[in-house]
Length: 333
Ligand SMILES: Nc1ncnc2c1ncn2[C@@H]1O[C@H](COP(=O)(O)OP(=O)(O)OP(=O)(O)O)[C@@H](O)[C@H]1O
Ligand SMILES: [Mg+2]
Image (cartoon, rainbow, N blue to C red; front, top):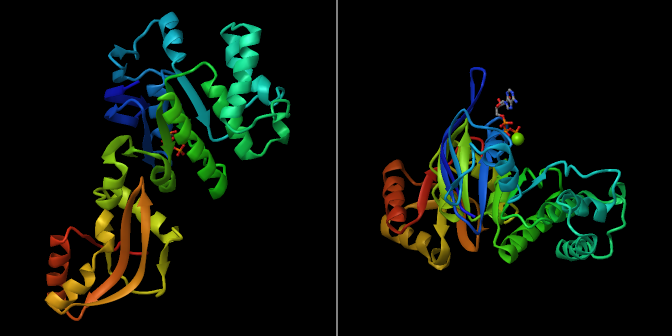
């Protein structure tokens, strides 16, 4: 299901929480929306999922406008949506399978069908045989698996994930993201993934929109954004990631005035050597590694370039001619 947003606005008193957002979220994809705390992510999700009405603008599911529907039609359209959250929102009084069964009971589905479908869903999320487990006995990762199964119970076409992995450790996060990606393909879902973590975008999303102060400041294919981030907010998210990413090894604590990014096949070419030979530049490499973004390898190198400004400038020009993205490293990297 394709989602189209046209100039969405939502104010709280004088605060523009969502301030003119237009987006095309293609069907059959994992679409990331990243932003800092207070950027307007949850507000935007409430507008897209019809939980709240925009002050201005339009929301379309496919060709159908859905932001101005009468109540009964709204309920009908909302069946197309599943949602999962950071804190799981499971019913503590129900066990795993009773949680999964809940939305099907609401829709008055036949008992036998509910039972069969619950078993299928437990298997789908990797919790076969755990249906009778009380929610309190499940780990965070297992709780999120139950929440995913419950969200998918009535076969939605869209799955919203609002900070779905923020309460989980890195390993569990990766497992849950892998599960979401797998389910997205299996069920041809449109997944809208809200996050403040660039890892989530890198590991799970096909496209991403960067939200800042209620506005989209950048949008595109994830590997393109990683290679050529444009807005300061995006650069900040990516550099926070490179500092902690374990495949980028730093062996010198200071220096590193430039960040070079090499893409795909270029990671195998001796570009640095040829630039050195051509310009006489000296590279003092401070950190280097490879990041994999959506199947594309991007080499990252943090370096100083000498021996003087003029030769450094020539070297940078030569690198850019080779398709390497050269940026002055943000302070504090
Ligand atoms: N119901 C509300 N009433 C008043 N202000 C609100 C309401 N909901 C959100 N806001 C304000 O709108 C802005 C955006 O909030 P929102 O919850 O959408 O941000 P967010 O990007 O989801 O942040 P976080 O990452 O912390 O969840 C914030 O300044 C928030 O205080
Ligand atoms: Mg939020």
